[in-house]
Image (cartoon, rainbow, N blue to C red; front, side, top):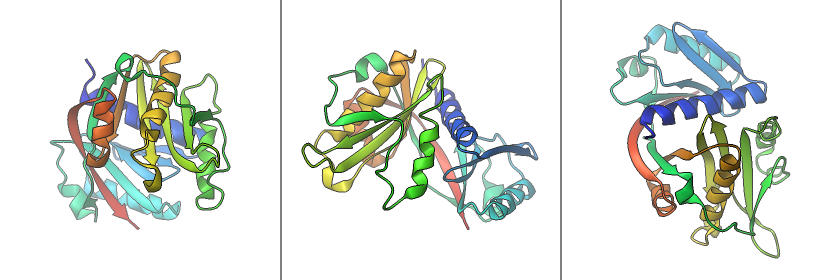
Length: 233
């Protein structure tokens, strides 16, 4: 049975994998492990924290010009040090899991796996460096993009990451004009199928209320909840 602890482990390992692939750092200070990745500095699922160590993490982010500092937690962890260090409570990940046999379905011809893309050049050029994770071998991460038929407008994206026999699904989004047209299902199935071919048996993800319906329709079940805290510099 997949547990919340499994979800947390996959999430942390995905952040670590991205940092290692994209030139970020993983550093331990005061019992806290900070992962300096493409989207800022993140502290992943500590059991306990001190205000002093958190403040040093914020200073580290300032030195590295990281725009944001995130802390991912399980429920029940004392959050008083976060408030004292200037963090604010954020959104709550809804952990979900599925047997990949339940996610399987026909491939969507509008969706394709890629190891590089120029789709982001106009509005988010820094995102392209993330494709380093899709080019590592042996393959552990896969990226899928969705396009409209004919004019090939970029409609959405998703990632998956192999961690043992679990596939983590991350950064999945369908742009607003293209929602409710099946792109989300196609993207989810594409990245899950890629991970399954490399040995995954179950998939895990963190959902927002907006995305939960899609994931439930595709075979995912909600198994728990977490919490995030953020320090915006």
